[in-house]
Image (cartoon, rainbow, N blue to C red; front, top):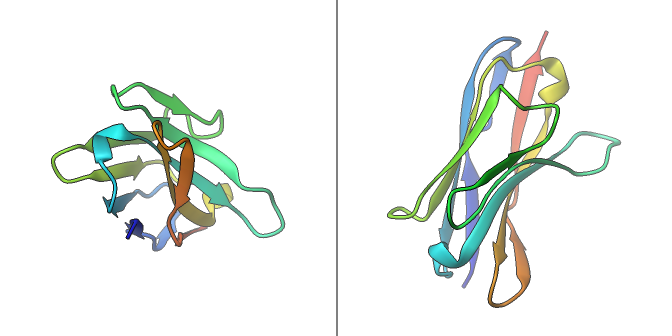
Length: 117
């Protein structure tokens, strides 16, 4: 059974930091491109960051320079370090995995991040 389990969402003041984790199981982690997406109320889901199997990273324009994505292949986990948080970062954050050989996407259940002004 494939599972992506996010953790780390919380309420934080503007300027603060949070660290989100996504633990995967049921898939060969090194075959996955991992990513974080977010969805705020009334808005479309948007890209936050991705990290490829080789460690290459990509970030949404709104988070560049503030967020850092990393992966630990030994723990089958992807991390999103979020610094200098802004109220507009408030959203449900979803972990995403793309399996290159199955050509299939998988999603976690989401974790709420709320940034107060």
